[in-house]
Amino acid sequence: MSEVRLVLATHNEHKVGELRAILAPVLPALDPASVVGARDVGAPEPVEDGLTFAENALIKARALAQFTGLPAVADDSGLSVDVLGGSPGIFSARWAGRHGDDRANLDLLLAQLADIAPEHRGARFVCAAALVTPDGFEHVETGTLEGALETVPRGTHGFGYDPILVPTGESRTCAELTPQEKNAISHRGTAFRALVPTLVRVLGG
Image (cartoon, rainbow, N blue to C red; front, side, top):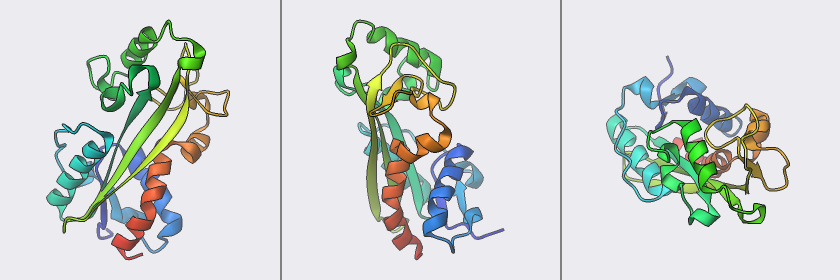
């Protein structure tokens, strides 16, 4: 097996694959098998008690770098709604009270915005991607996907709030875009791609 060189602070294999795909063109010498997730190394999940996406991403990356002794990448993301003062924000995944209940979160948000006119339904997905090395180096990049919120969910792709956010310049929701179309403009893709030059330096690519 390849020597592990980079650990991603997620137990989601899809996210691990996403990062491998982003790194492959810019780090051709990096064996994809040397990029693994937190589950692969048996790392515990830290308490995310930061007040911003960047703080939570750093908390996860720091914990993983300390646990493994390897460079670690983490991200934290969510939905920021203008008329709600930026909420759900860091609470996006547990807006309705139970972490990861996408349908309940979606239903609650739509109910809260029921009387809001279309011109005031501006929102964006935000992602902070953090890189932390065992010697204490830290770097954060942020990506956003601007758009507006629909009144009813549309589409079957994606997850979370994807069925109600229509990206600026689009008529389809994020859940109606193909995964390739979404990745090309997504907040997570933007943040990770911005992090690549620093990753290249850290990994000696």
